[in-house]
Image 1 (cartoon, helix red, strand yellow):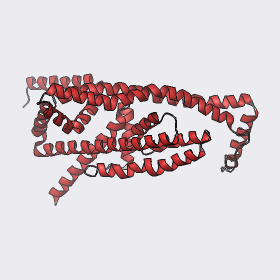
Image 2 (cartoon, one colour; image 1 turned 180 degrees about the horizontal axis):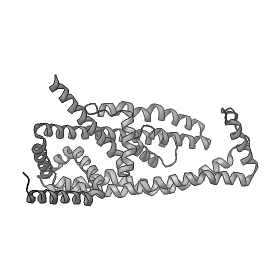
Image 3 (cartoon, rainbow, N blue to C red; image 1 turned 90 degrees about the horizontal axis):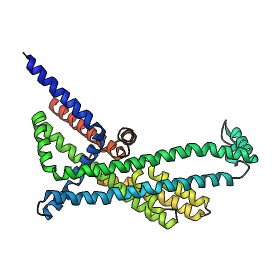
Amino acid sequence: MINTNQIARIALIALLIVGCVFVLHPFMAAMLFAAVICVFTWPLYQRIWLMLGKRDVLAAVIMTLLLLLALILPMAYLAVNLADSATVLLGEARKIMQSLPSTAPQWIENIPIMGSQFAESWQRAFVSHEELMRLTSHYAEPLRKHLLSAIQLVMGGFLQLLFVVFIAFFFYRDGARLANTVIAMVRRLGGALGEEMLQLSCMTVKGVMLGIFGTAVAQSTVALFGFWLAGAPMPLLLALATFFLSVVPAGPPLVWGSAALWLFNQGEHGWAIFLGVYGLLAISSVDNVIKPILISHSSHLPMLLVVLGVLGGALAFGFIGIFLGPTLLAVGLTLISHWVALQNKRAD
């Protein structure tokens, strides 16, 4: 029978756990993403650690500098240039609306049910200059708010990544000791099955991260060449946007499609058509070719879970949730599938 002292100790331990969770909750996303990155890059750290004579601190510093170059510099470039690009985009959108013909195109009039109303609104807006300016301001303000939200998301992601890299330094430095502690806890709580699940989780994290980042690098590299060749504005910025949006199924087409429309509006019809075809056959096809090869030995997330992982991760964790959400769902799906397979095997 449990006595009063045992109840008091359990209550104190429970309160201590709750307090630790409350303290660490604001940093949980950064800690999770830092852990994911460290698990993914641990083989590279091990090589550097051996080359440097097994010096933990020096190897951790080198890996932190590599993360700064790979993550922080591109993110800083994107954050700095996105605000200026948003201003230019709003100006271009206003010019496009003011240069449209005063008569609505025939395909607008042919839209079922609402076509005639759209055509009348089009003509009324362009007959009256005041109406046109009001219409332009009406659509420009929501667009400006969305662009500002995107800028805030990127700036928040930049700060999150800085904190992730900071935490990763300590995970690299103390990684071996932390890994032994986690293994001992898992062995204590789950036995052989717990160790198997932990190893499966690490393999899934490596496979999914390789698929996500490998595909992102491949798509952004192919996209950079196409943007540069077609003469799109700020090709490096567009390539970085392709990199970060490659997780979303419709992300890269949104980038190269917008660039193609910009070229078409500038009178570069040939290059606009080229970029559209290149984006469809080269940029978007990378996702269908490279990703299955990179994650062939890990869990394959259904398209619905990918979208939910990206959106839910962004809502829960901010910018880094774009990458963290699908990874966590992949680990969860793999562990559940493996557990179900074990139960079915035991039942047979």
